[in-house]
Structure formats: C-alpha cells, structure tokens
Image 1: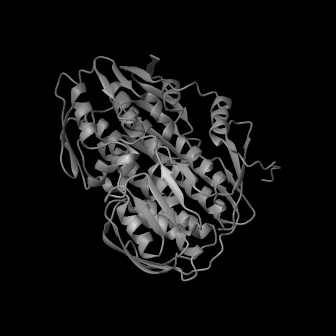
Image 2: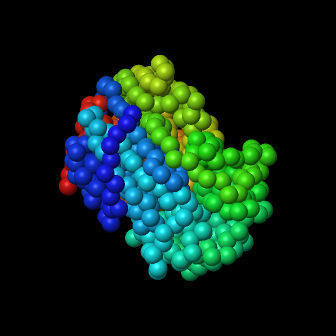
Image 3: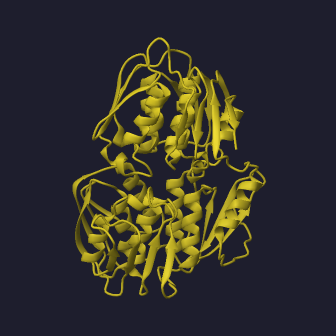
Length: 470
C-alpha cells in the first residue's frame, strides 16, 4: 500500500488531530448529554481502531530508524498526546486521509536516539498508558524530562512508584513529589544500564510493558522478574506481540513471571494495520444488551485474548453472539442473566459489563478488579455511587463489584450523573440510560474523546435517542 508523504515536524499535533475529527464528520463533543430510553437498536458499526495497538505501534515506529506506516490508527486524545510527545523527542510525522475517512500515520523514527531539548516538559494529558510507556523509554534520555498533567485529580493521583523504583535501580535519576510516584515526575538517564530487575505487576502491567520497550535500547538488555502477580496480563501479551513485529526478540522464561530481552537490538521500521478496539465494542455490546435488538460490529480481529474474554462475558449475560471472520453479530431479545466473572480478564470493560448486569434478573459479581480504584477515576466506588443514584443496586468492595437486580419496577433514572472525567464511566452511564424509565443526563461527556470520539454518533446511528444538551 504505497503512499507518498510529506514529512513535517509538528509543533502542535493536537491541531492536526482535531482536523482529523472534523474531516471524519464527528460533531464537536458535548459537555452534557441526555440519554432517553431507547429500544430496539439495529445497524452496522465499524468500531474505532484499537488504542492499545495504536500506542504500541507508534512507540515501535518512534524507536526505529527510517519510516514506518501505521494504517487506521485510533484517533483519540491518547493518540494525540503520544504523537505530540514523539514530535518533541525527535520524530517526524504525517497523517494522510483516506476516502473512507480513516487515516494513515507515517512516522520517521529516531532509531532509539532521543533528541531531547534541555529542560523538556511533556504534558501527558490524562493518558496513563502513555505516561508509563514514555517513562520507560525516556530513561535513556541524556537530558532531564519533566512529565506533567492538567488532570491532578485523575492521572495526577495514579501511582507510578514501582516503575520509578525499577528505573532508579537501573541508574536513571527519577524525581517525584510523593512516595507513590505521582506526577509531576522528572527523569534523566545518563547512567542507565541493563541487567536483572524485579518489579511488581500487581498494580499495572503497564510498568512491565515500559521496561520491555526500554530493554532493547540498553547494552545489557533486561532480565525481568515479575513479583506479586500481574494485572491486565493480556496487555502484556500485546506488548510482546508488537515488539516481535518490530524485530525485537523477547524470551519468555515463565509467562507472566519472567522475561529476558537481549540488549543492543534495533527496532525495525515497518507497516502496521491497527485492528478494531474490543473495549469500545464492549460499550456497544452493553448497549444492545440493555436496549435489545441486533447490531453488527466489523473489523474485530479473531484470536484477541481480551476480545474473546469480552465476547464470552456478554454471551454469558444473555447476548447471542456469532462471528463470521472479523465481523460480530450481537442479538439481545431475552431477559439478561446474572454473572460471576473474573474482571481482570476484561479490565477496561468492567464498567459497561456492570451497567448491563444492572438489568439482569439475578445477582452478578465482578471480582479481581482492585486496580480499578487507580484508573482515571475510582472505577469501583465512583461507578457504584453514580449507578445507585440512577436506581441500580451496586455494592462496591475492595476488589469487586456486586450488582443486585433492580426489581420489577426497573431502573428509574431521571438523574444527572457525573462521569468523573472518565471515558469508561461515560460509556457505562450512557448504556444504563438506554433502558431506564426516565432520561439520564451525563456531565463531562466530552471525555469520551479519550478513546471513542464517535460513541454518541454511533449509538444514534443504531437508533439510540441521545440529546446533546450543550
């Protein structure tokens, strides 16, 4: 798929990506939406491209010499933040538009040699994955880099201490104002070296992914031992898959426990095609589970560990799911069933799974999700507080969410719910509103841009009644 590009070193990539949204005919995102009871849903949707693949492909391209091409990247706030950072650190990028409205991203990489200006500051927005992955890579920077966020109550409260301690053991100079390793963080890597490292995977698999991206750049490589278990393990599998696509050898000693990455490896430039995003698709599955009907979702890659777990959960709750290659058909006409599920396998989809479970005729329990307390919001307590205000019966615990049936009168609605600056809570509250007795209003709805800017538009196309208040 040869494409001619003109390379530009963008100073403000956010402007470029806003133009992408406008050319995709996505209306300016509202601050407040009102969701009216809607049923049934019907239609075909192309879910957004996978944010998780996109971020990792961008990093692989950034660290390779020469030009890499990424077809159909996720256009989201997180992509925007990472592209801006890569431009600051020496990459040249260009976005080309296709006739179907999707994009092609071209990156002329750095070959692993960061061109860091003195006293650089990188604003990582509200993107936790971007922060952690960049912290790993920027540990090789000869100049100090300060990471900041304009969201002190969201990303600003999320811990990074385990990763910072690991990088410090490898010789990097790291500074944080708190023992939890919260932002702002300053990092410099003049004395960085490889070797053996032990790190906890209990709070986030992103810490280990960060070390894996760093390891090939170090002379000695890294011998990584994961202690205290590993949360969101499927995302670590994805990191390794993409590293191998980029020419990096990762030796698995024991899956989810021990990895060895030989040093002095060179990332290879290449062409990457981003598949559809299963957590975004999960929001649509939650919508059809509640509102009923039949929807078709395309470009959802077979064999995706996280994706298959999501489909299994919605099948168990009562959505009939069939697959034809990369196309999913989801039908929901019968009452939903309560479920007991290990939420760690579908961690980013837990809020919409919980929302759907609110409409089940028997109790549900989603367990092994303690790290949800440390996301953009507290996705256990904040989720429970708001859903209960709408008339659901949700009980939060330290590491689980319990949901009891709403009863014969259903879920009343008729309230304003605060999304807590969290795109996953927005998805959950919107889906709940599709089946409530009275409309539900969701504030701070524009934060959906973090992963799924077309969410409201796609639901409207399926027949949902969503009002843009302002």
